[in-house]
Image 1: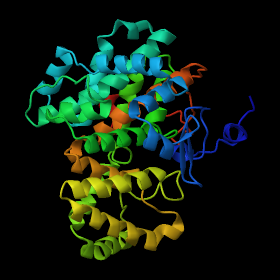
Image 2: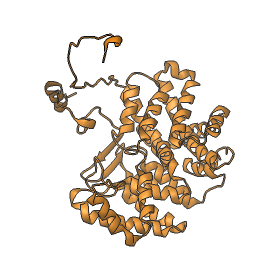
Image 3: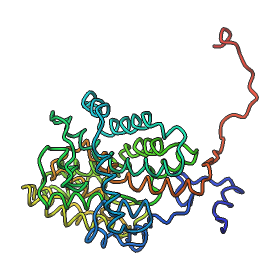
Image 4: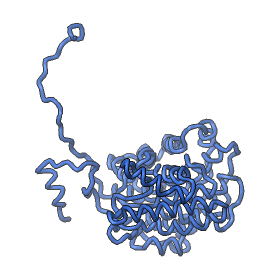
Length: 389
């Protein structure tokens, strides 16, 4: 393996890269983000092809196992997911007892509880890690749906064997079987968010698994990281901005004032993409469809005007809509409350977290970066507390 010259430079010159921007910390075959060309690739497959022809179950299998499943592999995998999506009484009680908590915090606690109750996690072998990871891919969407159900005052709904994971997310949330259009849109949302490079939450999961901890701990770390508004919470903030603007004719003044004050416009710009986010392109079409279907056309029209205005003003600087700009609008039109958007993100990203954690630990190296100390070096004289001013 060739050594990374940038890493050598950091070691020799003690160069600081805030946020690790531009620093390569691992090799991966799971997913590829081409920021210059605007491509997202899972194991060699373009995201456009997967969202058109595949399903979230297939994509999750692809990410974790490295290839698309044959009929037998698909059947076995979906059986694991369906069995896992039936929640234990202890998890259900946790959700309904703490239904007033923030959904992402509650999800994080539920995953931690699952780990505490699974003896395999204490001394996890490679096979155990993979088995537990696949079970979490099935269980996390059910937890998220049940959190939404509990917040709405409903009772726990068991998953239906007739529905896909996306369909059951809607069914376990509302108690009503979804129509095919809503199920398909939800399925695409899950695929689009399944993996996306070394983002903050994925990196957090790798740091945890690098200690040879268990996959529950890795995903608990990832969920806690995802909760921040600069990561998983951005779609909620983007939707709130669109709702605050209200209608297309208000866009230019509101956006103009925000830009003049140098306020961040959530849902625009990306650390990697310098062109239009391919996920946003796909979601934009579904956002138009689902808002029309549910009588929220004004929301989409306002968003379209925001996009046009932002591209006119900042497109030359590589600022375009990212996946968060339209995903919140889609979730809202499907009936989800904004405070649960980040937890839905986690339900999708679980497959990517598991895939990358398993991949990293297979050729493991404990993360141990250095910090540049800029404090006093001393030695300072210790003064007893009674003599201090």
